[in-house]
Length: 230
Image 1 (cartoon, rainbow, N blue to C red):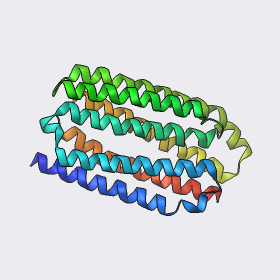
Image 2 (cartoon, one colour):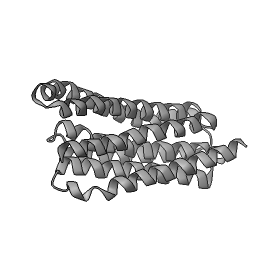
Image 3 (cartoon, one colour):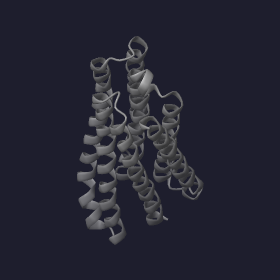
Image 4 (cartoon, one colour):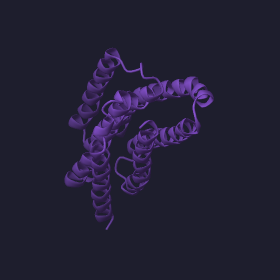
């Protein structure tokens, strides 16, 4: 019964993520002239689709039952992509000059190192909680740096935007913080729980359900911001 619930949760949440990604993509062409927002919107689509496909892979192979280290490696691999999308997509909404070639190259190198570490553990051991946790430090270090950079940028520009902007920009600042708070809590919390409970299904199912709410609000935020700047 537990396995059935797990599979159904993975498939349903995967479909929901793909549907939200498709919906967001379908309205993106209207914003091609808004370079920063357009890129952020496409990165959000990539984020949603990556998670949706990741859920499907988990449902097909059920590695959490037979190969826990691979299940953990897969999970942190698509969460790391989410962290990159957050870095490249959301910080530039506050500081359009933030994203540079050097940052892109740096983040891709870190991701490559992360993939090597995550999957080396999976290929060497089927169950190795300590080594999984050590490999996950790459994700946590990158995510922590990204979060600190976001909030530093947010605190620097939000007051200026609130003072200079109209009511709709003040609304943007408020719901953007709520959106990003949810993303941070879900992303870092989910990977931490995955590392602590690599074999447990119920915590992961609860995370999947919580993720629907987080991704829905993230999609809503992207759409709402598009209406503000259009």
